[in-house]
Amino acid sequence: GQSLEQPSEVTAVEGAIVQINCTYQTSGFYGLSWYQQHDGGAPTFLSYNALDGLEETGRFSSFLSRSDSYGYLLLQELQMKDSASYFCAVRGGYNQGGKLIFGQGTELSVKP
Amino acid sequence: DTAVSQTPKYLVTQMGNDKSIKCEQNLGHDTMYWYKQDSKKFLKIMFSYNNKELIINETVPNRFSPKSPDKAHLNLHINSLELGDSAVYFCASSQDTYNEQFFGPGTRLTVL
Image 1 (tube, each protein chain N blue to C red):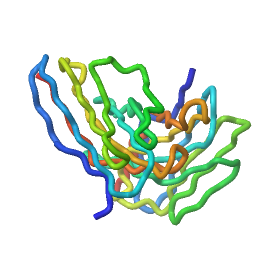
Image 2 (image 1 turned 60 degrees about the vertical axis):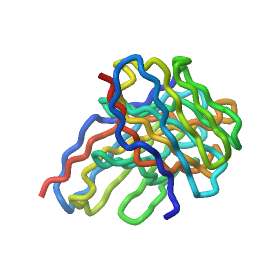
Image 3 (image 1 turned 90 degrees about the horizontal axis):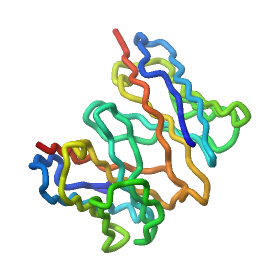
């Protein structure tokens, strides 16, 4: 089977740093992606890790440890506009058509 | 604007009806997808087409039938709508099956 676990909600204040964890169990693994979705909006791609280590894109960073089946999204210098749902997603291998399996999402609330 | 577009944005219909949702992408991508997002924001893949060929067909009732007339279009037809079909349906596209996915704005389907 395939499953991903991430916290259902996180609250932080403007300017702070927040880390959203994701653990996964999958039969095939080709990488871990992160997507952001604002209320009423579409998911938008944030980052992708195929190899172990940290990927940095501006205020957002994503980390992967394949041996621990674990990753996280780090958001720095939080802004009110970062309030949204964040999804981790595992990409399956070739025999799964490279499909994305999404976690349940973490609702991030940024307070003033 | 280069994007993934879907029509209609909202669809309200009675149980038992048949409806279609259309999706178009002008990004020149080879792969297109349909996802269903339920009221708990769980995002699940339904179908994927690569170069008009069906490559992912998840466990979806056969009342749902995707059709890809060409690489830029992927439509979803739903027969005999049921209350449980109420959800937001997202179309997405990617360069190929292993690249980041770009999502359309979603179609909110409400079955009464």
